[in-house]
Image (cartoon, rainbow, N blue to C red; front, side, top):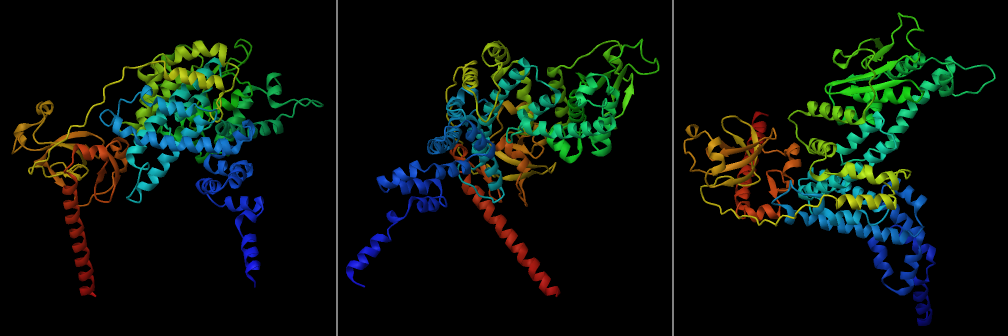
Length: 607
C-alpha cells in the first residue's frame, strides 16, 4: 500500500468521520463526565454533544428517580442538557455543603436551625424539580452510607458524620414541606384518617418517601373488591346503570350491607390481623395491606376510607387514650325496630360491629362526636411513643418535632397560623406536588424559612484535650463496665471527675476517688453515662453498635472492625488518642491470631 493510500485510510478512520448517530450511541455507554470531556475536545463535538437531546434525556433518566423523570416529561421544556447540567451541579453543591457542616456545627450538633441551612434550601428551591431532587440526593446519601458501613470502610461524603448532617438537612426540608401539605389539606378539607396516618409516617421517617398516590391506589383496590361484591348481590333496578355509590345514596343498598361487605373483604377474604405495637411497619398503610397485619389505627383508617367512599355515615373518633370507629344508622330511631342498634362501634380485631359499645367516658349514646384530624394525629403520636418506649432513634426524634409543629414551638413557631392565613387566597386551588413544585408553593416555603429568624450563635472553638499517661482508654474504643457488664462506647474523657458530675458520683464506691480519669460513654441501652476508669475494661470482642450510630454520627465516621473512627473535628479535640487505639488493636489482633492458631493446632492434634 502506498503512503498516500495509508494517509487516506488513517484520515477516514478518525472519529470525526463517524456519523453523529454512531457517536451518540458510543457516548450513551459512558457517564456524564466522559461525555462532557469529549465535548471539550473541539467545537464540532461540543455543539454535537450539547444539541443531542436524546443523549442527555438518557443521562437525566439515570440520575433522577423514575417519578421525577415522568414529571419532567410532562412539565419540562425538552431541554435535557440544561436540566441534566443543573441537577448535576446541585448534587455536587449539596455534597459540598453537607461535608462543610461538621466543622461549623460540631460544637452544637443538636441545635441546628432552619436558618443555619438556608444555603441548602436555596438550592432546593432554585427550580420546580430541585426540591424533590435535593431530597432524593440526601436520601441516596443515607442509603449508600448505610451500605458502606457493612464493609468497615468509607470515604466522604458517605460517612456517619455526613449521614448525620444530611439527615438534619433532610428533616428541615421535609418538615417544612409537610407543614405546607398539612395546611393545604386542612384548608381543602382533605385530612382523611388514612392521609393523616401517612402524614405521620412521612414526618417521622424522612429516609424514605411514602407517596399518597401509592397508598390511595392500594385502598382503591379494596374499594373495587367491595364494589364488585355489592354489584353481584345488588344489581339495582332493571334497566338502570347506577353505580354502587348511587345505589347506596338512593337507598337501594342499605349502609348496613356495605359495612358487612367491607368486613367480609378485609377480614374474611384478605384475613387482616390486628397488631398490638404501633411502629413504622404496622402504621404504614401500604405495608399493612401487603403484610395483612396492622395496628388498630391503620385498620380503622382503611375501613373508614372504604365505607366513606360509599357514603356511609361513619366517624373515627379519637381523644386521649381512646379511639373507636363509630357508625350511626341513617334512619331516625323512632322509625326503626327498637331492638336494632342506633350506634355501633367496630371491633377492629374481627371486623364485627357491636351495639352501644361506646367508651363510658365519651358521654351518652346521643352525644354526637365527629372526626378531628389534630386529635387523631396526637393519638397516633401517643401510640407510637408508647410502643417505642425507651428506644431512641431518628424516627422518635422526628416524632418529638411533630409535637413542636402541632403546638407551634421551636423551628415551627408561627408556621401553621401563617400558612392558614396566607394560603386561603394564594394556593387553595393549586394542587401540591413534591415532584414539581408550583411557583407559589416555592415562594411559601421560602417565606417559612425566614419566618422564625434566630440570632446566630458565635462559632465555638474545639477545646483540645491533652492526654496524660494515666488515661488508659481512648475515644472510639468499645469497653465494658466491670461491675454491671454493659457494653459502652467512649466518646470523651476528663483527667479528673468534672465538677458538674461530682454530686452524681458515689465517692465511697471508688477506690481512687475523683482523682482518676473519667469517661463520657454511651451505653448499648442508649443511656449516657460518666464512668470512672477503675470501672472500665476494654472489650475482648468489639462489635459494631449500629443502633447507636444515629447519636454518635457527628463524632465518628465508621466502625473499622475494632473501634469507631473519630472524624476530623473529634481528632482535633483528642489529638493523641489514635496511637492508643492502634496499640489496643494490635494486641487484639495478636490475641485473635494466637487463639486461632491454637484452635487449629488442637484440632489437628486430636485428628
